Length: 215
Ligand SMILES: Cc1ncc(COP(=O)(O)OP(=O)(O)O)c(N)n1
Ligand SMILES: Cc1ncsc1CCOP(=O)(O)O
Ligand SMILES: [Mg+2]
Image 1 (cartoon, rainbow, N blue to C red):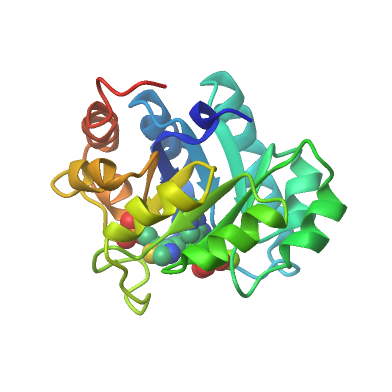
Image 2 (spheres, rainbow, N blue to C red):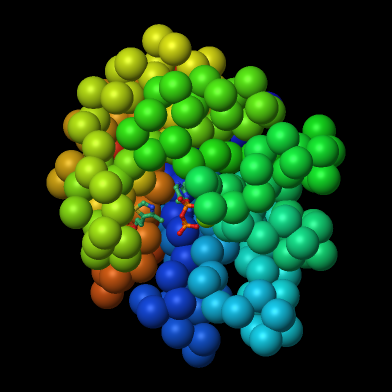
């Protein structure tokens, strides 16, 4: 995997901001606006809501193929396998990385949440992660209780971890450039894109924050 596989605008779906009738429409608007990575994050019941989840994930996978974006499934390796997602993202409460790598094989791109810990990122790299995510950097409307992390962790992580660095949590068009300057390869965003009235326009403006960067 090259760094450019996980770089630029990384959007994450949200059931509250993207109710069923406009779910795909809003996801596609973000891709039209230049999102390079799209994560399906659905906290519904994996068993009781399996048909809806599978339908949405399958449709998103096709959209991502069309726009040549990386499709990531949050938390759920079974769903990732069912819909043929190229990537999966896990955190502290999810399947451990070593077991996940054994289950998914070499070809799947695995992302790991590292919150505010460079040590955790080094361990994740040793356990087979392909990218690491840090945050929440700012107050997050989508995850208000997420502990806050200073952006200088990105500078430290850049020196210590040879993987793409994803930043998450309260990232906006106004603060995004500073996060990139601190060392983020990708900005992971929910509200900044999907709470906007013009999703495509918001995605375009986030995408422009990366202009001039080497891929
Ligand atoms: C890109 C990215 N970074 C961090 C997270 C958070 O993952 P996790 O800590 O497992 O929390 P949930 O998203 O599962 O609530 C993420 N999903 N994506
Ligand atoms: C999943 C997650 N993990 C830390 S913050 C967050 C949510 C990010 O959403 P927003 O961009 O709305 O702050
Ligand atoms: Mg998780």
